[in-house]
Length: 300
Image 1: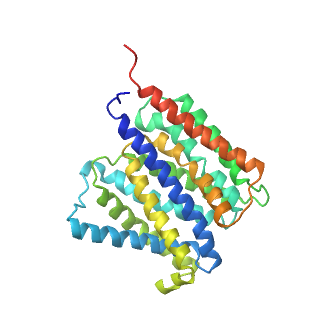
Image 2 (image 1 turned 135 degrees about the horizontal axis):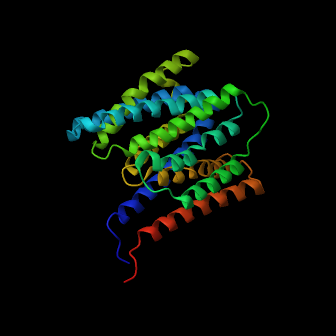
Image 3 (image 1 turned 60 degrees about the vertical axis):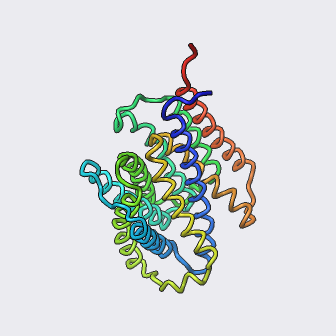
């Protein structure tokens, strides 16, 4: 079948978004292993942001890549950097008041928020089938994570909801940077993220020198590498597919995390979790199929 213009890019964008979700899912499991060795979350966040800045700086020096940002996209880049910093900050803070499972379920409302807000933000047509797929995927995520509804603290719920809102905004801001070079998107966004993570680390009092990463070297490398790869793929994907399609693809993240935990950590999955995984996969396949059908040329 001959692809209509843009369809190949859409497919690549969806694959990139799914790969980014998988990388982030791997990151979650390795971060848990690193935490058991004494490396707290804020410390890993700080070093992964610092390393991203260093790598981008080296790439710019070698390939002479431009860090210039078109004037029309500077506001979107500023919003992208701020929301990227706040997503992790609010999410990490929410688990201090909520069970991790509850925080995860509240946080993963953001794909539904993206689909609902997309017509208002981008002017695109409302897609009820995409909203249905997002809702099914959300139910699947809730089944996979298995939230514990005890000990709900309003502060934790507000922080997790704030992380969800920031994540939705991050996707829209990232999609509004089509003319900004990739290196510029990575560099300036992380330059905004670094002071936020440094402030959180100073408040938590958990700063350790780089040598502390040797406490769990493999877990630290996988955690930092998973973030670097996931963020890179996410940024690239957002220039190829709509925020709604990308947000829905990221529902695969907790599914990947749970499956990897089952293999690496030996965690056992129950029937409800398997059913949740199946729901998420079904929602993703349905969305990809509908996207393909919508873009396929009509018969003569």
